[in-house]
Image 1: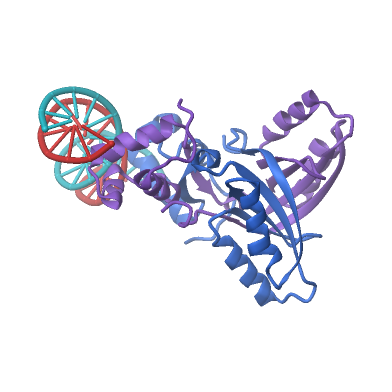
Image 2: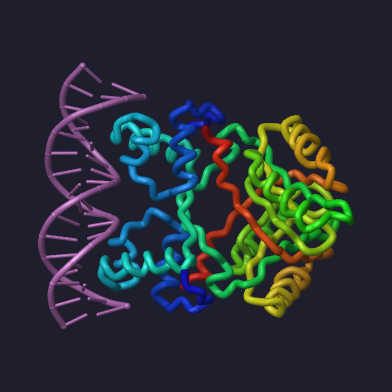
Length: 159
Length: 159
DNA sequence: GGTGAAAACCTGTCTTC
DNA sequence: GAAGACAGGTTTTCACC
């Protein structure tokens, strides 16, 4: 895997732009979009994957349609004495929990923000108590309900 | 689009589980994974899309490889008098900005948390000043650097 | 890098159960 | 719902530019 950053040319940027919006776009669609041959865009997509610019392709699931009607952000502060190892351990453990959809490790007042999707408020309470407050390394938590959540697949970043 | 929630059967849950991890999995791969015929999983995937369980397919881009070396979460509080309309307007405007990768609308102390990806700290400062602090409806902001960010594509949620 | 062409493979639809 | 079969599209490789 090479180590270049931010040097996507026009065409790569366009390709990424299409794939971010539709991971299943065919090479033919991509070829039309950028004005090159199918085999060429195919090679470029592969290079983007190899370089790690494209890190994978995921289906977007509406959590509320899978019985996860409630989302929350939980701010977590670890105990002041927490070592590197306990931070890593906490992070690894939490991130493996099925309720967790995202984990941010932060600089600032809070050490982590955990984005969770659960069935209802009792599921949320159970999650926080069992997996966060109950952890020895956790000093405090603060939970905010997510009313609305938007992931951006904005046009502007990529051609 | 039907309106059922959380009633995925075993097979649908497995299919979703595979597609969340690899949006480009073929019907053949899915068929093998769940032990049914290709045409059958094909029909099931379509139903999942129609029901809105699967909301789309996106390529995952490593922002740091596209010249966006710095990510931050910006907590935003709007002015107390902010009306429904100004909240909506703020949300729509911010979410369309190319630096914004996610927007959470919250209940609690903060009204919004904005996840941004920018080139560097001066880009971050510019973003916050120009698009957030500068907004009439914004009362205050608090910015935290994201040291590490994990999106979860955990096995456990889906069979 | 880019290309067209060929082979292997996959999707989408239809018919049947 | 599930399955096999088929036509048309798509991916992948390759020899050539």
